[in-house]
Amino acid sequence: MGSVKLVPGFFSIALAASIWFVVPAPEGVSLNAWHLLALFVGTVVAIIGKVMPIGALAILAITLVAITGVTNDSTSGAIKDALSGFSNSLIWLIGIAIVISRGLAKTGLGNRIGYYFITLFGKKTIGIGYSLALAELVIAPVTPSNTARGGGIIHPIMKSIASSFGSSPEEGTSRKIGHYLALVNYHINPITSAMFITATAPNPLIVKLIADATGASISISWGAWALAALLPGLVCIALVPLVIYGIYPPEIKTTPDASDYAKSKLAEMGSMSYGEKVMVAVFALLLLLWAGVPAMFFGAEFAVNTTAVAFLGLSVLLVTGVLSWEDVLKEKSAWDTVVWFSALVMMATFLNKLGLVHWFSTVVQSNIEQFHLSWGVSVVILVVVYFYVHYFFASTTAHITAMFAAFYAAGLALGAPPLFLGLLLAGASSLMMSLTHYATGTSPIIFGSGYVSMEDWWIVGFIMSLVNLAVWGIVGGLWWKGLGYW
Image (cartoon, rainbow, N blue to C red):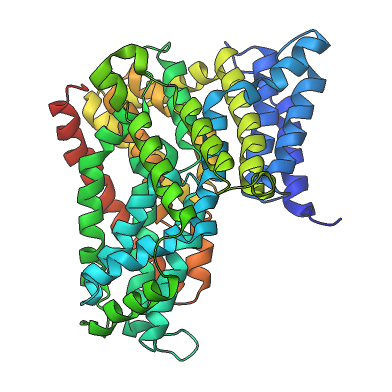
């Protein structure tokens, strides 16, 4: 059957069919909403079970919504609903930004940034850890694929540094330096993903779900998200290399040769190429416009839509020849993301419109309410459950699509300040990637390089989850209070 996995496929179909045909719709839930839930649950379970590539599953989901007419009685209306996700500008923001980030690899700018930081801080092993962290932070705003960033750009640099010190899994010398650097390489990735809307693909979905739940009274801009995540993000980045150093200290503590190695790599690359210079200029342009700097100085009429900014950046790269149209067509992950993201956003949107999210959030709310807790304690329970359920997910997108809207609505009903709750759950949605070796696309790449055992991975993952959640909740909460967000 080619790439189709039959056992999880059969299970996802059986589950969807059971909800559709066997389990009656609860009181207060329309039949259409219940049937859409059946399709949605089947799709999410198929994604978790990796029955088919996620893009192929998205096509099936769009087809089923269009054919079953769960959102609309007319056939033309049903297909319009099924394809409505493709008109969402946030989806195109991520797709276009992934294409733009291709320039990092094509021009070599990503490697240059990594090696540059190592020349500055690479005298000690912990300094190399911070170098990897800073390199990832610099490129995070323009790399919506956290897998491409952590696994495709930073990880090869980390491996080349480790091997230059004779640290390799094959020779049993991982603990020299590679074990430590691999853990730092990985655990910075969820933090940078939480710091910018454009740092991981599901973040715009969160923005949409928050806007939908609050009747668009809260629509988080790129700049507002970045400012909110700035302090807790930097504190987490500062802690990661230190905490991992404390748990699993590397055998090699000082690395005077690392700086020289990085300098030799930069010398090999030579001076900045034309393509790299254009990429730097485009990055600066994107960040200025995404952060709303022209609007700050010259007024609201100079504000530019976030997705329009991404299209502008890509247009500049195409006109200057840094990227060709062939490069755009070859960026499969961008087109794949646009397809699966559109399907999931469409289903999540109609689950909300048909009232199912409200019903489920009411169930969660009433279960917590019976304990007569304050909104603060209630939020802690909601966030902890939402976060650690990720042990059962291999996709942050599937997890967010399945649970975010209902948990957010439940928190609102329990009295939590809307923006505070939204930012906390948004942070948790990326930080939960720290837990397992299958939590997100970056995990299997770094885990698969063999430097870290599964036991060590899960131990550090759990410890970092506690650290990150505490920082985002306490430091982040106080920071947002100071910003007047709640």
